[in-house]
Image 1 (tube, one colour):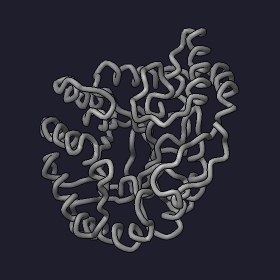
Image 2: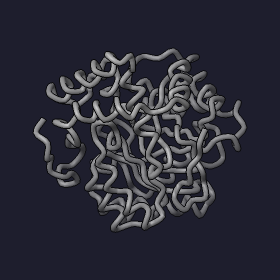
Image 3: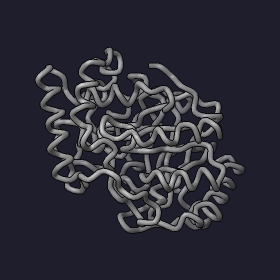
Length: 316
C-alpha cells in the first residue's frame, strides 16, 4: 500500500489506516473474536497505523487491542490513542489526567510507547485550557519517552484553526470533513503544510452516511441530508457501484492527507476496503455524484460548545 509522510514527524503512514472505534462497539454489537481478527487483517493487508481512544467503548477498544497487539511485532505498526474524553459527557483535560491517561493506555494495550497521542474532542471544553495546560503536559510525556508525537482531534474547523494559531502540535486528525459530501478540511491543508503538521483524515463514510448501511441512532444527519445522500447512493447502485467504494476512493485520492482512518470489527469488510484501494476511481461517476450532493455540500452540524464552531452556511 502507498505510504505518505506525516508532516515533519519522519513517520510514513499507509494511505488507509485502521480505526479501532469499532472495537468499542460504537456502531453495533460485535463478535469479540471477529473484532480481534479484524486487527490482524488490517495489518496483514498492509495498514501500518492503528487509531483508538479510551472513549471508544469506554476502554473496551484499548482492552481488546491489548489482547491482540502482543501477538504482532511492535515495529510492524504505529499506534495512536487519545485522551481528554472518557464518556459521553465526561471530559478531563487536566495535566494530572494527561499522565494518568497515557499510563493507563500503555497498560491496557500492553505496549511500552505510543507513537501518537491526541487531545480528543476538545471542542467540548475551553480552548485556552488545551493550549495552556493539556498540550504542555502532553509534551512532558514526550520528554519521558512514553509518547513520540502529539496533536488534536475533533470536528469543528474553527477549533482546529484556533489550536494551529496558538499552539505547537505535530499532527492533526479531522473527521467527517473530507468526504464526498463535505470537503471543509481543505481549509486546513495550507496551514498544516506551512507549519509542518501531519494532517490525517478519518471517517470517509461520515459514520455510515455515505454507505448503504443503517445509520447509528446518534447520527445527526437531517432528513434532507439523508434524502439527498440516498439519491446519490441509488445513482451509484444504478451503475453497479457501492457508494461506499466511491466515498473511500475519493478520500484516499488526495495526497494532502497522509492517511484516511476507518475501521470495522468485520475482517471481510476491511479486506474489501483494501481491495477497493487497488481499483481505479471512476471519475465520471464521481462528478455525477458530487453534482447530486451539491445542495448539501459542506453541510455540517454543531458539536461541542457553540463558540468553538463556525456558523452553518448550508440550509439542510
